[in-house]
View 1 (cartoon, rainbow, N blue to C red):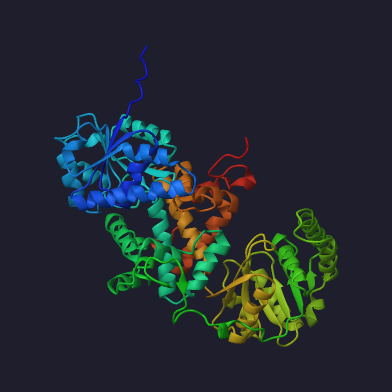
View 2 (view 1 turned 120 degrees about the horizontal axis):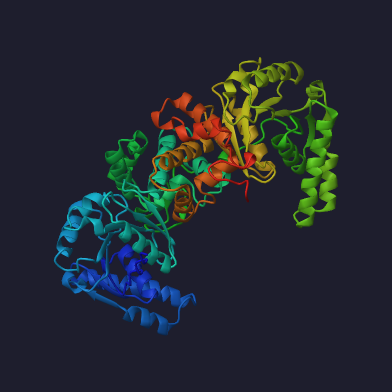
Length: 598
């Protein structure tokens, strides 16, 4: 009978490089009772490292997270030095110097003669090849990547990067150590960007391209992802925070390693960096800031002025809604709450009654939670009129179509609405993926046809993408934006192309996550944890795919691929296989995860 080897005991940790990240890593280990030796190349570096540590722990004392004696105890566990030989007793050495391959390799070469043969060596690189760094050491099997996220004492995610020669025992020991520190380690293979940066920077780069091609304004791109996906920051504001020079370097490294066109830095990114517009740290990037390092955005030449606020150029009193599904019922509720008379059309009286019942239930929940009163409920319901006849829409000022995503069915409806509705009435579609111009072309008034893409559930989600075709009049677009604002929605403007803003940025990112899983680069659980904890996203990509439905996701991804002909947008084969097998996500009980036993 073989006995399980005892878990390795770590007592002394070495940290090389005491910038913000290195000092943060030293603090994490010292907080957990480990003896830490921090090495810098000169006395200035040591002084800077000491300052980082004192400031960080001082902030914790001020916030009541640590006492002064605990701070003194923590700092007492850390010895700072300019001599690498002082790391001789370290059981683990973490390198956190500048992102230079030669500098890192020189350190790993030097460590051979300093630390014991069984000491583990780790690099905190965020974009360089861990394999290449490990080749500088005589024992590459003991080398691993440990990518902490900034600020290291606060962020729980750590990406552990295994190379093809990393010893399994080393991987397991580092994983166990990080868990003891209260971190959430995720394991992945060695390719530029690892999990979080690979998925994040592809998405950020796509947002930059969208802005560069003037498809939408910076404000609208950022608002779309915040209000449409619940992201804590929009992509362009996030790039300003990260630093455009850092983003450029990461993308450039990722592109050189993988040759994926989606990682080739958008040309405007290089122009900004060359011009010294690096984001918050320089006071200007995609936005302009009050001062360098300030988070406060100030108006600049690109900021919309108060005079640009959209106004109702058409009088919108009565709104028509065609459809009785979840989305249609939500839109009816939005307009009724906003004070409009709403006439909605269903195929049968049962369907019409169902909409009233759905909205009544929605209001009952709001009343229970104190979000609405019985009086408000009665007033909103009194504004509703249901019918089974399209002809009743003759007098409405705006019609919103919310029927099945089928172009032939929608086109026929628009032909009918064109004949029924009065001149000047605005005809809107809620399509999320079909060409709006095709519906506009079926009418004699293409200038009055527009997209109003609500997000589900419409009564709760703030975002509406207002989509203009090449024929939509500016007055109609402005009126619809103003109308959205009047009913409490955030309207963003964009052109009529597949995916609009949100889906065009979201679904390629989800598709990239599926490709990552398919390549056995990391597990679905680790990828989800990396994106939720490393990027503060509300859901991981596989959680989200299973909620949206893999069939819906595949259909949108196919539309994007057909429209843009971008090889990187080709749907991941694994997604296609799951859909073929009927594993559509939560609605079928099985998708990327099995929900049947939950």
